[in-house]
Amino acid sequence: RDDLDITVLDLAEADLPTALSYEPAPEVGTVLARVTPQLESAEAFVVITPEYNHSFPASLKSLIDWHFTQWQAKPVAFVSYG
Image 1 (tube, one colour):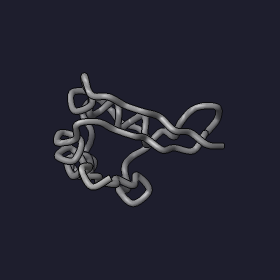
Image 2 (cartoon, rainbow, N blue to C red):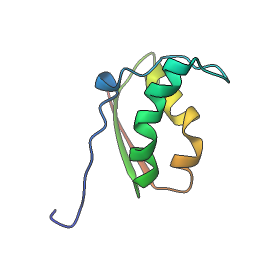
Image 3 (tube, helix red, strand yellow):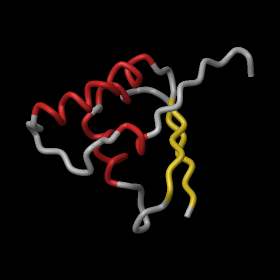
C-alpha cells in the first residue's frame, strides 16, 4: 500500500540483550536507546517472531518490557511461526 510508511526493525541485527536489569550497564543502555525513537514514532506494530520454547524470544520480551511507554496504547499484531 502506498499510504503506509513501514520501518523494519530486525532484532537479530539490533544486537539487543536477552536479559535486562533495572539499571542496565551504559553500553546496554546505548543499544536500547538506538531503537527507542523508532518505537516512539510508530503508530502501530506488526511483530513477526519465531516460536521459542512455546513463547517468543527473550530479546523481544526485553524490548517490550524496557520500552513499555513506547508500546503503550498502540495496536500490536503478533505473527508467530515455529
